[in-house]
Amino acid sequence: MLRFEEARQIVNNALGSYAIDRFPEELYEPVRYILSIGGKRLRPALVLMACSVFNDAVHQAIKPALAIEFFHNFTLLHDDIMDNSNIRRGQPTVHERWDPNTAILSGDVMSILSYKIISESDDRYLKDLLQLFNSTALQVCEGQQYDMNFESRMDVTVGEYLKMIALKTAVLIAASLKAGAISGGADTVDAELLYEFGMNLGMAFQIRDDHLDVYGDPDKFGKKIGNDIVTNKKTFLLIKALELSDPEMKSRLNNLLGNKNLDPETKVREVTSIYQQLGIDSITADLASAYYEKSIQYLERVNAEAPRKESLAEFAEKLMYREA
Image (tube, rainbow, N blue to C red; front, side, top):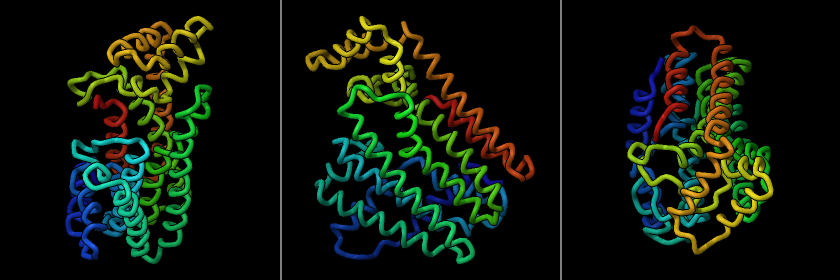
């Protein structure tokens, strides 16, 4: 049984010893940079933790873990360009520190390196790992496109939103757990149960993240709350509010979203007031809890002794009830 912090340390050590000694320097330095500025290492740690449920030889899951971390960071490089984000993990984004073309190309390199790394996995599990990796990579890109599509739409449904976060966020968490299970020698049923555990946990994670952006404690959240409101991001809260509003309230909400001259603090306050009137706080919290409870049900069905699953259960609880 491997706990999250132990798994995270193994991942950081492996990343630290992974030599990227190719040239030109201008192509690979941004790759080293994005890996060096921190990150939770949540997904690669889950690979190792899932492996440890079935097998103490977690070293055989290190390659899939690193591959997933490289792939995840590749998506961040490209997402930051698409979102025009200037800060990542408290540091300048790659396109800000260098330029967008460099970020695109270095991101491409990270994607290719992720495949190179996973191809070095144990031959016994390589076919299943590659199949999982390929399908997940496609789904993540599909999720990002849906998210981009939503930027210009005001008629996004709750169902469309849930599909988007399933693809953009949840599938990579689910794939991390399944990759670890495969690397640990789990049978097909248990590997799929961990995948479903990860899917539902990923859904809870993203919905909780949406909730924290509005209702989190700024001192604990680490940044000003309400950024999603300021940027008109199509979160569950906004979509549900538009769905539940009567015509008068919907008109008021749309006016707030469309008023470019409104100062951010006023906008956050007014939109949050509408959320409160509609009970969006509790609706969102309840949905996140429902996904979390479902995830635990899948974990409980995994055919392994309870102590071996304990770390994943503890991790899921902390992820669900985090304040930042």
